[in-house]
Structure formats: structure tokens, C-alpha cells
Image 1 (tube, rainbow, N blue to C red):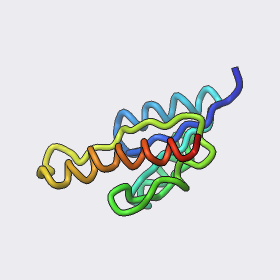
Image 2 (tube, rainbow, N blue to C red):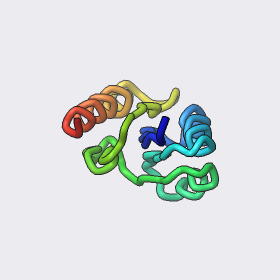
Image 3 (cartoon, helix red, strand yellow):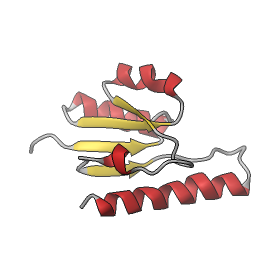
Length: 104
């Protein structure tokens, strides 16, 4: 099987980092979407390519361009209120689905 290019939304989270490391170690393309550019070095250390994009305020078309697969591993976090969970957990997932469909 050839290399696949995988984009992981919420790339700085624990689950995302494990996935990105695994992908990079087996030679696949591993792109992690992060909101905070200060986290880019952490992803690079895993062998992943950081993509800075705020899923709450930006579209994801450019972030998923060329991807063979996408993974949604983002979350507003346990201290977030209902509105933030709506914009990140639900809104971000819907944006990813829409972007992936447009890239088919």
C-alpha cells in the first residue's frame, strides 16, 4: 500500500498527536490542524506538518486540500460552555465534513 495523506483536526490533542506520530513513523503524510502557531514545533517533532487554522472562524478547504483521509480529533475541552462546544465540537465537525465533500 502506498503512502496516504491524512489531515487531523485538533492536531495538538493527545489522541491526535498519537495518531500523527504513528502516521509519520510508517511513512504516511501526517498534517495536524492547530489553532495556536506556538504548537507547530510540537507537531514537527512528531514528524507531522502543522497547519494553522482556527476551525471556529475559518473554512477548512485549504487545510484538507490533497488529503486522502481526514480525522476530527478536536474538542472545546471540559471547561468550555455549551456555546463553545457548539462552535468547536459540532461546528468544526460539520465544517470538516463539508470541506471533505467538496474535495471528493
